[in-house]
Structure formats: C-alpha cells, structure tokens
Length: 189
Length: 189
DNA sequence: GCCCGCATGTAAGCCGTTACATGATTAA
DNA sequence: TTAATCATGTAACGGCTTACATGCGGGC
Image (tube, rainbow over all chains, first blue to last red; front, side, top):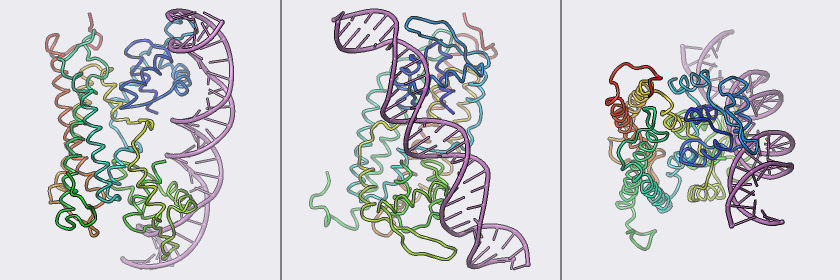
C-alpha cells in the first residue's frame, strides 16, 4: 500500500511516465527505501487514475503516457505523510539478521560483523561527498528530492559502523575470560 | 522466506512450541525486526519438520508440541546469516516517508520531523537503561538473544534523532531568506 | 462452574513477484 | 539492418493477512 504514495511523491516532482517511474526506483530510492518494477507500476497507475489521484499529462512518442498528480492526489499523499504511523507489520531482514547473531558462534558472528562494518564504510564513502556540498535549493523553494533522506542515510551508516565496531568488542570480551585460544589456534588481529 | 530463519534462530535458543514462538514475535523482535502470527508459524513449523530442519522435542499438556533445531537446521541458519545479502527487494516504509518529505511544504515537513524526533527520543528512553548495564553473558558463553540488536537500535535511534534535528535546521535555512513565518503553500515565483 | 489463557490449526482472498509477451524508435 | 533502449502490459504462482474454527487446563 506504500507503492501508491511512492508514485504520488515521485509524480509531485513533475509529470512522468510509468517507464520514468520504474527508472526512479532503480536509484537511491529503490536501493534504500522502496522498490518496484513496471509490472506493479502500470497497474497501480491505472488504479490511481481511476481514483482521480493522478491524471494523464500528455503523450509522447512510442506510446509514452505521462501522468501528473491531481489536487486530490496531493491531499492523499500529504495525509499519509502526516498520519501517525500505526502498526504496519514490521519486516526488516537486515535487523532480523542482527537479532539472530547470537545463534552463531563468536567466530562466525565476527565474520558477519566485519562484513557489516565494511559495507557501512562503503556506503559512507558514497554518501559523504554528496552531503559535503552546502544545502542545495531547488526551484520553488524546496529541498531537492532525496536530500534529507541522504542525510539520514549518512547518519544511519555511521551508526551502523559504530555499532559493528562496538559489537566486535563485545565479542572479544566474551572470548577473553573464558577461552583464551583453545578453540581457535591463532589469536585474532 | 525470512520467517523460517527467524524460527530457526529462536529455536536455536532452546526448544519451543508454536505458541512460544508467537509470543516471542510480540516482543522486541516483532516490533523492530520481523513479525509473524501463529497462522503463519504453524504451517512453517510443519514445513521445516518435513525438510528435517527442526524436529519434535517433547510434548506437554493441552497438546503442546515443542520443537528443536536439527544439525541441518543449524547449518541452514548459519549459511543464511553468513551469505552476502543480495538484492532482496528493499521495503522500508519509514525511509520512504523521508524521501517523500520534499513533497510537503516546509511547515508540514517540520511537523513530521518533530514527530520523528519525539519518537526516537522515546525509543532511546526505553533502550538506554537496558544497555546501561555491563555486558551480560548467558550460559554457554554466548551473548543473550537480542543484546547486540539492542545496541544497534540504540545507535540507530540516536542517529535518527540527530538527523531530525539537522533536517529541521535545513528547513530553517530554506525559510529564512524568503519569508519567516506565515506563507501560503503556493507562494512560488 | 466459569472464565481466561494456553494451544493448535484451516480457508479464502489479497498482494506482490517472476516470467511471459509485444511493439516502436533511434543510433551504430 | 541490427541491436539497444524506450515503452507498456498480462498470467501464473507463492506468501501473507484476515477470518474462521476447535478444545484443554488451571485459577477464582
């Protein structure tokens, strides 16, 4: 049910076709927030049109059909963004992995944690430069799409990296007093 | 497909019945990582038993049937936790909201951001005390279930709070040079 | 004796994913 | 003329949610 709001949000940046929208989901939006392919986009666009939340906004070559948001659509999106989040089923696979880390023996857990640390560092390297520039303003007196979200991502990955480092330390504490190296021939670096 | 790993992970803490597992999903695990009800748990337990990943581990009163993880089940869980995450469809509604924030006018965006700040603060107040104690060690030389995840949550909410504060500042920058205070949504040039 | 909590399942329907399917335009 | 990209959809399948359905045991 969030797909429709993603579409309304993207269309409120300006008219776009189903194809354009599918491409938009391949970028930062798709890799961090919400993913959708044309197979779900086209039916949803049809439904949104029926409900009067979007409307055709010009046709192009190759059968291209662009859509724009109606006032009703804008209101619907606004209501959703302002509505207090109530218990939609949480489904967060990465976090589930963290919960299940205690099911691994310490050596395996370290492997996972190092991978997480490396991954968050890589993400930081991508986001850092993008956020280093001063606050950009897009025409219309608004912040550009995704700018605030990128700032969130930056802080989230920093926190993830910090956590992984801390967690590795916790595992070390666990191994020290009990088994100095019985199970593992070589001490870790 | 992640449900089975959640079940394997929970069962690797010790034998449990479907009912026990359903209760486990009502706690921190369910509210932050993965949610499931008995309606999905029981069929999945049957399937896991068929596949030899879990096995019956004693019966109790009122038809209670407990299950334990088999060696094959442990191996399956380990493989999943160690496997590099490949593009499972990202579906993160809270983050989607952040992306769409630019579709709101600044006043509405501030409302959302203040709510996020308040929410993360509340979560911190819950997690903080739990993490203040020194590293606990459960019997068997392992960290207790969810301990590392709680540390992650702590850092994540701290980052969210930090972000919301920063984002409010960015919005202020946007409003200052133009008009501080009251303005209509469509006051563009 | 009655109610609450323990304990387990099934059936129908919705939603989303994967795979199938087609055609137009443009650049090499 | 051939390949890549633009552009739009449908069909089958599988997972998840909601609602339906049943019965025992212990405390008050």
